[in-house]
Every structure is written in C-alpha cells, then in structure tokens.
Amino acid sequence: MLRRSIQGGAVLIGVLCAGTALAQKKQGDVNVFLRGGVGDYTGDLGDLSSTGPLWGLTLNLQPTTFLGFEVGYEGSQNQVSDSRLLDGPSLVRNGGSALVKVSPPFLTTVRPFAGVGLGMSYVDVRGASAGLYDSDLMEEVPLAVGLEFNSGGLTAGVRGTYRVLIDQDFADITAPDNGGGGLMDASLTLGARF
Image (cartoon, rainbow, N blue to C red):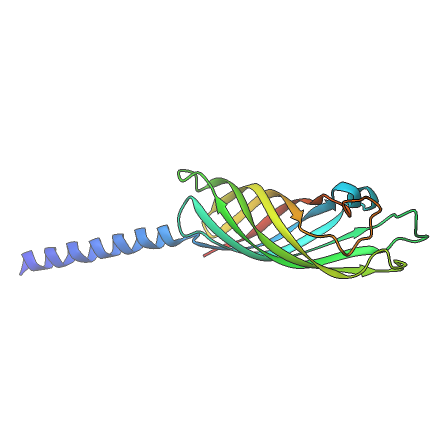
C-alpha cells in the first residue's frame, strides 16, 4: 500500500513537472505588440517629404526559437514640400504586411532577428495636390532587422525596416524612374507574450 502511494506520488510529481516545463516552453510562442516610431521616404520622393510619425499593431508567432512569422497593421504620415505646390499635402499611409523572421536559435531572452516579407498600403493624399499626388495602393517588400527583449509575459524591442516600394504611382515625380527609393522607419515595440 505504501509502495503504491509512493509510486502514485512519483507519477503525480512527474506529470506536474512535465506540465510546468511544457507551460514554460509554450510561454512566448505568440506575441502581440504595439509599434511607435518615425519614418520617411527615400529616393526622389524622400527629397520632397519630411520625417513623420509611424504606428502599428503586430501579431508574432514563434513556432521555433529560430523562426518566426508576423502579420500586422501599420500607418504613417509624412508632409510633402513640393516647390510645384503652394501648400504641400500630407501622405497618410495605412497598410498591412506579413514577415518571415529568422534569429539565432540559442538566444531567446535577448533575440536579434532579420526578416523579409510582402505588404500593401493605401496612401491617402490629404490636402491640395494639383493632380501631382493621388491616393492609391502601393505594393511593398519589407526588410527588417531588430532586437527583441523577452521576459515572462512581456516583450519589448527596437527595429528598423526598409520597405522597397514596388510602385509609387500616387506621386508624380519629375525623375525618369518615377521616384525610386522606398520607405525607411525606426520604431520601438512593447507588448505581451502568450
């Protein structure tokens, strides 16, 4: 009888320890975080725009320690100072993107990463544009690098993203390549891990 109790207690302790270890391993598989920072266009359009605020919300899935997937919403606003216009408009961008991230498998608490993905944004031209700027959709290829700090149920980080703009049809730039360049930003992240 005593032997069965000891065996039953050992099995119960084993199950509890395994459950705790599994729960600890699962912690952080899903991260939700807010982003805030600054961004600006590059290339010919960057010569006409000013640095402006950036905001966003991201869901990160981390199935393994070295591979992650993100989907998120992002917005930004940049003023335009075009000599062809008396008062330049502002470019308000709202869009979404998906990103594949890789990081060293042995770093989880402080995790550097690099990522690449696909995105699409709607650029809303606000203000007088004299037909030089029109609201339009643009496709993007985001390239990101950053550093995440993970502790318990919290995550924070810093990142830089360069978006290669597939088209810039919303802007009539006098350069022969219709603007060239992309969109660069730097941001801080803060959120929760599940």
